[in-house]
Structure formats: structure tokens, C-alpha cells
Image 1 (cartoon, one colour):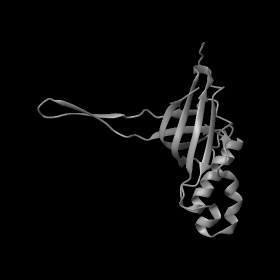
Image 2 (spheres, one colour):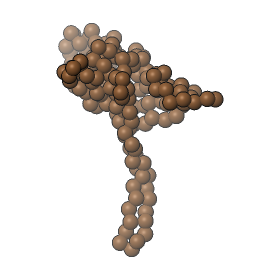
Image 3 (cartoon, one colour):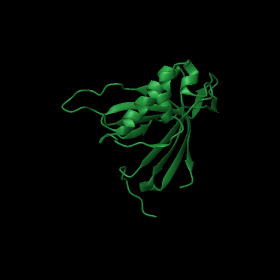
Length: 165
């Protein structure tokens, strides 16, 4: 199968869910006005409105530790690692509004939401499962430059693993 380096056809779909601490947004705090945010929970959302220069990126992962004792012997060990998934969306994106809603829900609940997802990259015929994540960084207001700049967010996942394409 032919491959390309086109990133424009990649698709990210995420779903936010309760981590089980509260059954509903309203139930977690007792504030009934939070119920309007419950439409954000359990509904898969295709993320759209990416920035032009850096839609998303994943930080390099440290998967092992290597140490050398004073006797010169080298020792290797696997270490668990989190996977920060950095997203950059334009401020007029509906997906930006969705993620902002998730931040608002987390702030009101005083709990994190569980985020899972699927990333499909047709250009290289690959698909990835994104598991056990949380929205960990958020830029609440776009930088005001010549035009409003893209807003960065990070969803940190426990793992991102290849899935059947």
C-alpha cells in the first residue's frame, strides 16, 4: 500500500466519561446548574479545527532507565511512562468549545474526567488506541496577535497503542 506524509486526513475521536467518583455532574457537587454540561459526557467527539502549523504532537517517551555502577556494570530497567498528547486548535473551532466545556466540567466537579480516544492516520495506514487519559493542560484565552492564535491543550494518556487499521 502506498504511503504519504499528508497529515490533513488524520482523525482524532475522543470520549469523556466519569471516573466513577460521581454518577453525574450534578451529583458530584449538588449544584443543579451543572446538569447542562452532562451532554459532554459519553458522547464521542471528532476533534476538528486544527492549527495549520502543529495540529498535534506526542512528546518523546522514556521507556527505560540505564544506570552504571561504580564497578562499570550497566543495568537496564523498563519504567512506566505517561504519554502527553499535545493538541493545538484554532480559537473558532467547535472542538475548542468542547474541550473548554470539559475543563469547565472538571473545575465544577473538582474531579478529572476519563478521556479515551482513537487516532487514525490514513497516510501511513495506522490507527492507535488512546487509553486512560485526562485533560492536563489548557490555554484558556488565545494569544492576540495579528489574528487570534491557536490554543494549546494536553491530554495525558496512560498508553497509546497500535490498533488494527
